[in-house]
Image 1 (cartoon, one colour):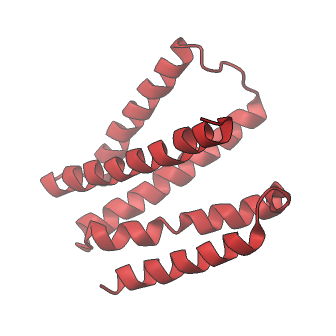
Image 2 (cartoon, helix red, strand yellow):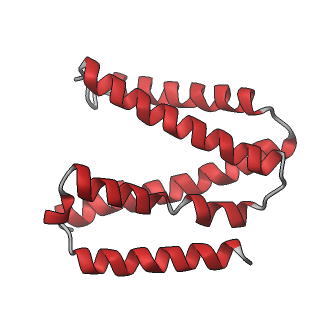
Length: 146
């Protein structure tokens, strides 16, 4: 297996499975009855334990103030987004099957920003990326209207 394939499995396929499981756990938790604040605290404890385990396993101890601030921005964005999903599930009764395709279009935002901020347009086939992005939008729109 090439390093590229291994990287795609580790950084793409496995996270996709875990993010899918995360949505199911979130739906189960909010369906049983948990406030959004307690949900986020419980999820935060799990993230803290995961980070502690990775630190203990010595999978990267380097950091700087700037990198920590960017990591905190990542956590804040994830936390707010996850809280908004919980609001839609709890207060508005939106089915998870309609929400996930919509919020999964976050990949379009990440791709667009990565192309611009990190100049990744030099490393990817932009026409294929655009076609795939159009298909994501079409799919998200179809599922949201289902």
